[in-house]
Amino acid sequence: MAMEGGTSLAQDLCARLCHDMVGPLGTVGAALDLLGEEPEAPALAQDAAAELRRRLKFWRAACGAGTGPLAVSGLTALLEGMLAGGRARLVAEAMPAERVLAAPVAPLLLLGALLVGEALPRGGTVTLAPQGEGFVLRPEGAMRAWPAALPALLRGEAVEGARAAPALLLLRLAAAAGWRVALAPESEPDALRIAPGG
Image 1 (cartoon, rainbow, N blue to C red):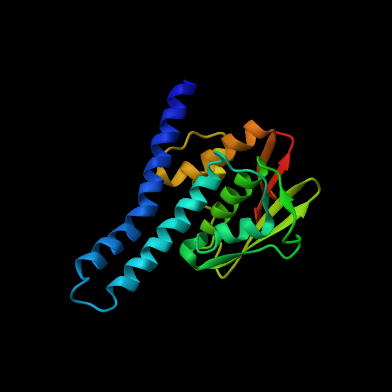
Image 2: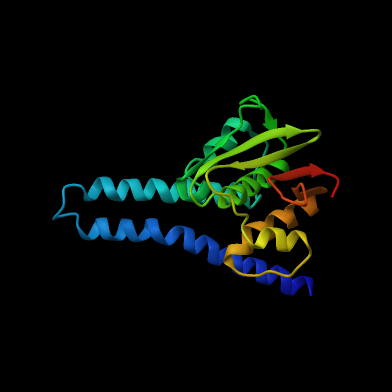
């Protein structure tokens, strides 16, 4: 059963990664097709290539493989343009930019911020602050709606699919690191808490 769940997560994560990469790749392809005809084509291709690099850097760090300790400033840089399709940004004013996050914690905060950003379909800010030994991520914007997979997975329900992959990966990485993830307060959640004590 664990193997089936791992395979499903791998498939869903690959589908999510492909979804995140296909748009910029299409732009690169279209720009290359127009190279001789449109003077803006090279700049368009460069912008799309930069977008691909940014997304790949984020996913490499978020998946945890080879992610070492990461400063808050590095976390903020990796999340630039990733939250709510670029309509939200991370605010971590309560934490010094030079504060270094331990290797197992950085991917948890990256994935947590991504999910909190998904709760802001019209954009806004994702606020990151320390709370006790852990952290709290709070969505702030005109409209807030948690991605359906997150509360369902936290209730122990089985959820699959590419849209659920970040939440499932967050919970698995948190469990492996001995951390826990929760929406709080339970009645009307307005924050995602990530703390030691899985």
